[in-house]
Length: 98
Image (cartoon, rainbow, N blue to C red; front, side):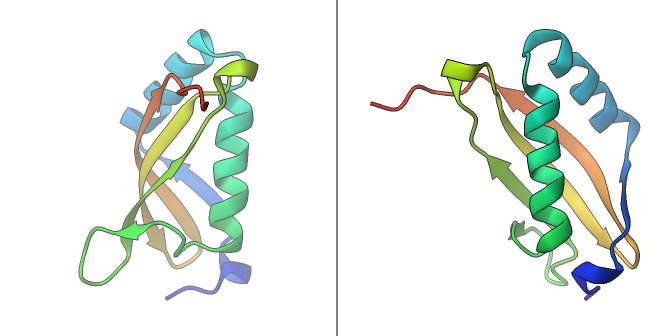
């Protein structure tokens, strides 16, 4: 498994990039939520739930906050030797917590 220090950047599959672009048209803070997700994955790429036996393909959900127009985002990503590849992204309206 790649060390977080060796992970230098992100690559986005076209499907994921389209979801991100669409989300930025809907939610004011969609880009902030994506930045948060990237920050988490750069520091701990194994934070998400493994989808494959090797653990290289994973999913992670970061909860949003409706009060500040920050959506919930779920991504499927693959850990590559020197980057993280975002395969798919799904943005949803954050649920209010009571």
